[in-house]
Image (cartoon, rainbow, N blue to C red):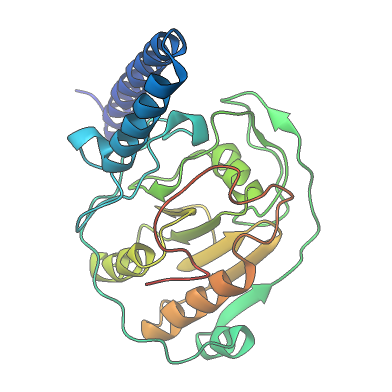
Length: 264
């Protein structure tokens, strides 16, 4: 009988195979498009963008309750076979505290800003995880393009080298312990739904926090989940640091939807 780990790996491999098929299809369509006139190419580009944004009729698009909001354009990253989180989140309460320092203190979170930059080296997929100096990591060697983790919500933790590359492009990543009760996970999913543009959400069983958020060289880590106080701390962290660090313009990889700087 297959173990749970083997079953998860088999599912992950099927998702990777499906993603590879989609990428090959994109390349075939692109080749055809180059053979057409400029006007036709423009029309095809619009259609491709619309299909990518909608998820092609499947799960993980940018619309709808419970969507994982995954950026499905393979030019901007990869799911790397990680299962999307399409659970419907709980609507978060209104903001009460907007000052980052105050919000972090009220939620009992550790706030570390402008940490040392550990480098920007590109390494091959499946490389051994570097010895990152923070947990969760906030900078350092990371996977080469196009394997950076695509914007979106996931049910499993991607490889650290994959999501560290996403940080380099100005992304914010919200992470939580898989031991967190599902009701609290759904509160975080609901918060993510309000600011999913260029943002990632996933569980992390390796970090020492119940909830954490990271941007390149910045970290807020919370030992306990304190409901609205924790949500306010994450909001304030996103508004303060999203899109401002990493050395790569956050708009280099296109995205749609609300952002931590301008949430719903």
